[in-house]
Length: 306
Image (cartoon, one colour):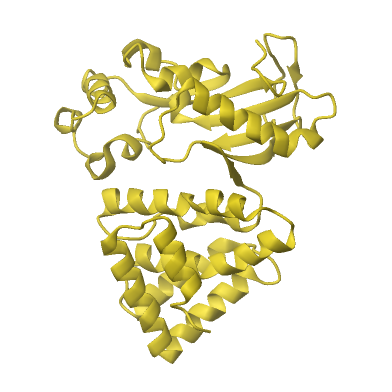
């Protein structure tokens, strides 16, 4: 198997990967081509994972960890190489399933976002969340507009009644969504556009025409209303939801999403170079906690039902 292919070169070019990342990935891919044993071992992992269908990714990522030690490559970098080598197969499966090429490119853009996160947090080209891509490569998670969507179920043991009188019970079909770190502001127009596009993709699952969008995220921490700027797009994002559950955490595990490599610093030393960082650093330094929440949006294809 050839590793440094025209497809992968064009893949990196399309998303304008940082030069340092392209240089590193190209070096490793060419090393896989020139060192047969190394290349064969990587091929076995990629093929084992992707055939007959993408499944049990962690088993193969454990193999990548062993390769990184054996061949003295950074684990985050080699994880990303593993993902890159899967993408041509994923592309072919999109085509086989009759999915659009544009949907493939829109969805795979997430790899750049995770690459940038790794550079910011770990100071090395790669990814520290390779397992996240199992959902993408199994063709279960797709990008429509600003968000990434996938089918899920309501899993709480209690019922929840929305303001418009809809009852969620355990097992209720939902469309879960995630907010990639693309940098695109969460404006009213951007959020609504994503919901409308996802509605068209998943409306066949909701015969009565009413769809339930679901999200669990640090962005839904309700106490944001106490310390984020009034015009914050995060507050606008939160306003779309009816909050079902929330909690505070002794350790703020999502701090890296705000502070990158500085997230382990004492609150008094956290960078305050953006309005979000300043608000969060001040909040944490005052002895407060971070948290997260889960919420639902009821959507009829054109608007959120309240």
